[in-house]
Image (cartoon, rainbow, N blue to C red; front, side):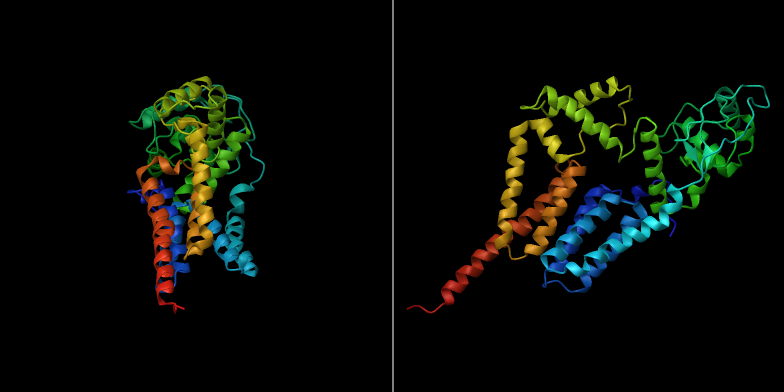
Length: 380
């Protein structure tokens, strides 16, 4: 399966792929655990959900399904089947292993200057590489800039179609082909290569990768970039470390009352400025619902939210659909650690829908059922 979008997550164009993953995973375990539904419904839901998660490489969604599956089997006391849940992730990791373990990177060339006489910049950091070639070896920036601007009508200092710095895309793409980053390298590119670079492809092999391979490659780049001390800007996994650190710094100054919703954006921009990170396309929230509540509304808001969750857990023991409700609650809490789930209308809508379905409607059904039992019992 090859998905044609440069960014496969654009397949989810009406709702965030994370919110859609929450909705799909909870619906699956609800229909699976509730005998009122036809047995084909959860199968169809699972098939469609896994297909969507595959083409979009939504790791969070896969984790939601894994967490829900573990909860489901534990509640049914089917512990011997737990290992089955880990077989697909292990198979995927083995499949993706070649993307992570590559030979020691080597320079794209061994000359000290270009054919036109410009001296190559020396940066042979082993952390930056593409397909076994050092990213910043054989780099002549001035020559690269002039030759690219002569070859195309797009300024090298601009952005590609993924809103990435075009110059970095060019450098990484040339490196992936083992070409020097100079006029000779640019002239060796064909028209399709030029179009790939404009589209935001940083590796010439990426055109033929499926979404899962693209995501694994992106995570590998994020890791090597973070390991080398680079800024994880726009990198959804390691970027969260920056967000947590920024949130921590703000909360240390305002531990009790927080800073208020209206001030969050300004405070994050201020922290990005201290880190010398351009804040235009960076998140202005912690990407963690617990921290977001604390930051925006103070510690009392966080305590109230935790008490609400505890109250929902206490209602599980009398719940008519304890398995579906438990899966929802565990998946919801897991999403709160990685997302600002309640900071969007879809997130609030999905959460409210399932809280009403699993806790309020179930509670009313339980009361009706109990009343009927009492009314039908013989009187002494």
